[in-house]
Image 1 (cartoon, rainbow, N blue to C red):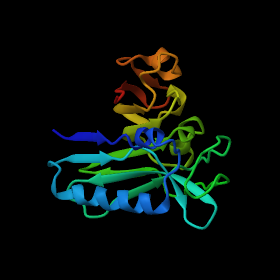
Image 2 (image 1 turned 30 degrees about the horizontal axis):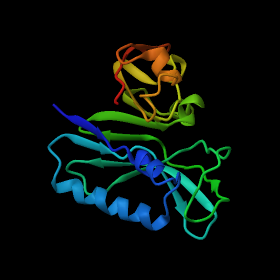
Image 3 (image 1 turned 30 degrees about the vertical axis):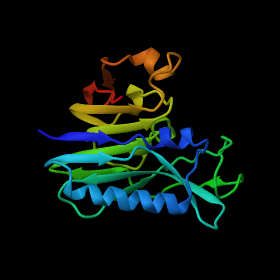
Image 4 (image 1 turned 45 degrees about the horizontal axis):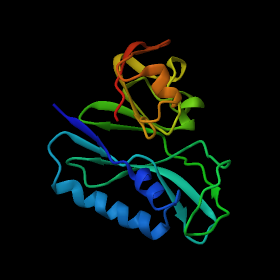
Length: 199
């Protein structure tokens, strides 16, 4: 039996009054993720959640999820493919930053299981479907208010949809109102799927 662990990094940034961490802070966090390799149990994934980090000296930032697979030395980096430039982010690198879209496919395999990952707007814009990936065993949505929809799921029959919501304690959060904590999503193209929010 395996497990998936989500690290809630953006909460710490909000406590500091920042929404984007510096490039040095981001690199330090990557190193700390790698150091977990010898401490996690067999068949465990550690997912950082979404990290907003500045690209030093470039006037840009990216939104990234780091994935650590027990038994694999290298981290997987997934950069959000659908940029968000309409929010007034505060950054140690300066106030005027442009979000850069990622180019990586949001899919990876671990222990024979096919995973797909999306960050917020990626789901609304059907990033996993549009990139042409095959149906997934597990689809992961990391969000701050983005509501999961059946139309945008891309799962095999009986696949799992994991929704990690930053703002789940807010009673006005759209996802919380619509799905609560135990409901299902039925994917139109791939059959029923289990909806398993991670809080």
